[in-house]
Image (cartoon, rainbow, N blue to C red; front, side):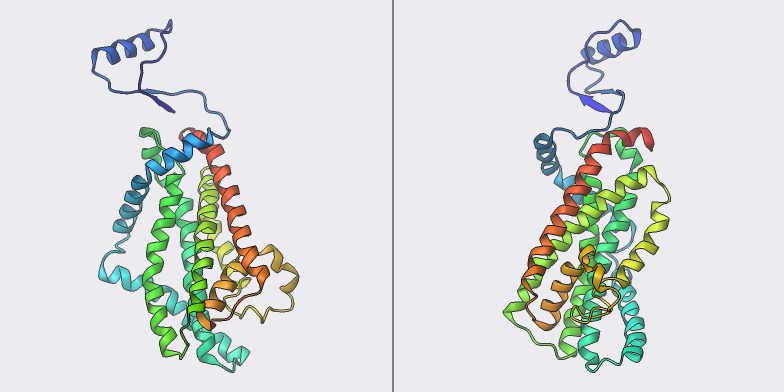
Length: 302
């Protein structure tokens, strides 16, 4: 569907002639023309220019999503913290007993930081996957870059991530972790997380349009990904069986560098500083391009 600010070219059909006359008489301010859809990328420069111009629209979508989920109420904020915190406690009790970690305080701080950040990424993916299918009325009745919808989901997930991070600061102090300027490097990996989450949210938002069972599959996919990432174990304590597959896990450098800097103030190896943005940019490019190439097909599929 495209929206034209000028009347469509004259045609021999009566319907188009009626629309043209209504437009010229002032009764219509814009004309919606339904054209055959096709898969392909739109002109990128005008698209991203319009995307930036409509950024407030994405922010409002995010605020509406947060209001509908009651995340601005007291108990809504409490649940945002309790859900990942209780999960971290369950894993801590299980792994502390089985693995016999010498420094339980350090492991608990690492575990909470990792689970909180993973919840941000998984929340962006699951909310993004529902964004297009759940916004069918907007797609059918408004002209805007559809990429705003998964990006608004990432914004929602990020604001839901802030209350747990405030709790992590308390955990960091109570477990005796130190503070240093070196820990500001965690912001570098946090930026990589945001870019990575945006790409994944966009990819799954488009995939959900064609395969409606995607949202049912995602919880299992994300849970397995949690076990394969440096959250339940330190980055240097890679399980032997996982070592050959680490180069295929983009969250290994992203979350590994983030938790090492934030929790312990350790400087990650150079390859992690390089691999994290490369993975993030590559995933974002693939997710954005796939979404943009398919978005003109959404109105027909929904």
